[in-house]
Structures are given as C-alpha cells and as structure tokens.
Image (cartoon, rainbow, N blue to C red; front, side, top):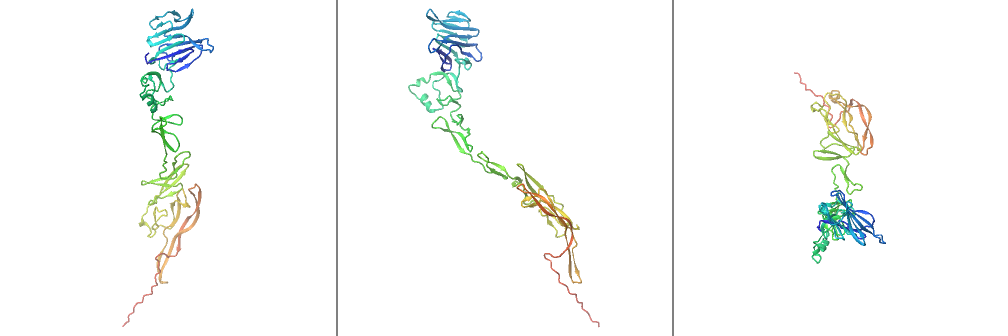
Length: 473
C-alpha cells in the first residue's frame, strides 16, 4: 500500500486499530459508525453491525458492514448456508454477485473476503466476517473523520501517514542511542510508519512525553509550562530570573538563572526614597515643593517661605493640599525711589531687604506702611501684613544763645502717638495655627527729644572779644 494511505481495521471480539494506529477493545451488540465525514465532501461513510457471538463471556463479533457512497447503500454480510459461511452483497437492497461493477465502484470476492474499491476517492473496504479493513488516502480524509476509526492524535501532535520509526527528541542522549548510533538496528531506521508526530516546526521534548516545543532550548517552570531562552521568569519578588542558555546536566532542559534586583534609591531634589509594602523596591515620593532658578533646583518644605539669595524682592511659599505640593511665588514691587528727594541721612532699606526707602524732603511726620511676611517660631503668615512705622520731617535746628554763650540744640523726633495691638494667624509646618500679636501704630507726631548721637560734642563757650582802645591826643 501507498505510505500516504491510512488503514482502520478490526477483528475478533472485537479489536480495533484506528487510522492513527491507536489500538483499543470495544464490546457491544449494536450498529456503530466506523467512520463518517465531519464535513461532507465525498458523501462517504461506513457502518458496522456487531452481535454477541454466543460466548459465555458475552463477546461481540462483526456481523455486517454497510458502505454509504453518493446515492448507494452497499451492504456486505457473512451468512451460513448449509454449514458453509459465505459473503452476501446487496446494492440499494438488490442482491449482486461478485464480480460486480458500475461507473462508481467495483465489488470482488474470493469466497472468503469481499473487497469494495471506489477509484474516485481511492478507497478500499474489505470484509470477511470476523475481519474488516478500511483503506483511505490521508490527503483526502485527514482531520475530517469521526467514529470508531477516527483520525485523532493527542494535541499538539498531528497525524502523519509517513513518519520516522523513532521520532527525534530534545534529549541528545536518547537521539544518539536510538537514531544515530550504527548497529544491528540501523537498517530499520529508514522504515517509515504512520502515527502521531510533532508538527514540522516543533520538536518532541522527550520520549516519555507528548509535548512538542518550538525549540529545544527551553526552561521548565514550576507550574509545568515552559519558556524559551531569554524570556523572563516570575520567581521571587526581589530577584530577576530568566531562562538561560545553560544546559541542565540531568535533563534536556535549560537552567533558570536568577540574580538579585538592585534598587535605585537615588531620588531627585524634593523627593525621598520610601519602602513600598509587598514590593521589592521602594519609590521616590515627593516631600517638598520644587523651585527651579537658573538651572538649579531647590526643595521647599510645606509651610516654609524662602527668599533666594541676591533677590530679596521674591519670596516662595510651599503649601501642601491633600497630596499635592503647590509653590506660591510672591514678588514685591518697590515704589519709585529718588535719593535726591530724601532728607540726607534718612536713606535705608526696608526690613525685608527689598526696597530702598527714606524720609522725603518736606514730607510731614506721619504713619507709613510696609507689607512684610510675619514669621515666628518657624510659622508664617500666608498673606502679606502691613507693618506700620512713623516717618517724616520734624522741627530740628541749632542756634547760638547769647545768654548761655553756647550753641543750643532743639530736636524733635517723628514718633508714635497712639498704638494698638493686632493679631494674625500664622501657619506652621505641622498644620497647626499660631496666633501672633504685634503692635500697630495708629498716629504719629513730632515729640521733643534729646539732641545726642554718635559724633556729637558740646561747643566751648567763646569769651567776648576785647576791642583795643586808642588814646586821644
């Protein structure tokens, strides 16, 4: 027979061998489909009828076989006539005597065995009472039959009508012993057989398994599955494991290599490394506001106010709302300043270091305000607070007293005349509030004061000058 033809056959009480070479025993006194097409292509099917053979064990034997092809029903059975068992055949219910043929099939008989041949589908069916056989081409019926003779292979194997006697595996020792070694069995290695084999692009993992793998360089996982070389393998949470190209000495598998995971604990400015629960490595968590000035990054803790060096007119405040860090930038705009319009000696810089201030010429003594951020014990006011001061010109002069024969100084200073206490709420880094009390100037005025100061000295009394007198002649 052609190697690409598959055979299903049976005998006795009864024994079955399927198209893919699987053997099994089956008992039953009924009619069964030996094979039928799953998707009808040739309108071909075969049925067998079993009966109890009269054995004390209740064994069943084939009684007849029925072939359905196109619009034909071909019935073949063995019947005892005068003590002699002979085959009888009917076509669509009419008795025919072999040899018989028409345009679709031929029936022949040797007296013991009846043979049905269907050339169009290259099928042959034989029946001799206790023995039957069905020959079908693999190319026409593979994967499209069901019944007692079904083409079935355990997944992922596939049926081949012409395969090697010993299928190569991923086990090099096994291959060397049973395939490549030259000995008395070598002549049989070229014999091809039908059966179940791995697909063309896969390899049999071992002779004791039905696993087909795309490559022999694989690693076995704990759950029974496998992975290829280079694939990551989930193992312990703090290890990075992968399927290596190192062979396992005790099996055809490769070894899984693991190495500890190195955690990167370096965090950018304003972030802190914190350990995460149930995780190998922690994460960088933001803990401060971020301020970037001239390509330099600064961290600002929540609740703090910061003034950059060399830029006293800018202040940054960090506010934390829920899990968000918000940076607030405040810029102070200074009033116009002309030192020529100032009373000499009164030029100074505001307490926050931002603006130049002075007592303008001709400006009377009065209350002036300067917006500042109040701070106490590390707590800050969220908004600018107008801090008051007294500034302006007062009557100050020096004159010579003829009575005391010395310079007399009259000094007055622009000072507070009425004040009051005011309060403001300061925000602290621990999210608490602090009540801060400060003095507010309500009115200012010129008050007489001592005329003294650095570098001042009393002038000495000058005695009266004596004029020369001339005598008269």
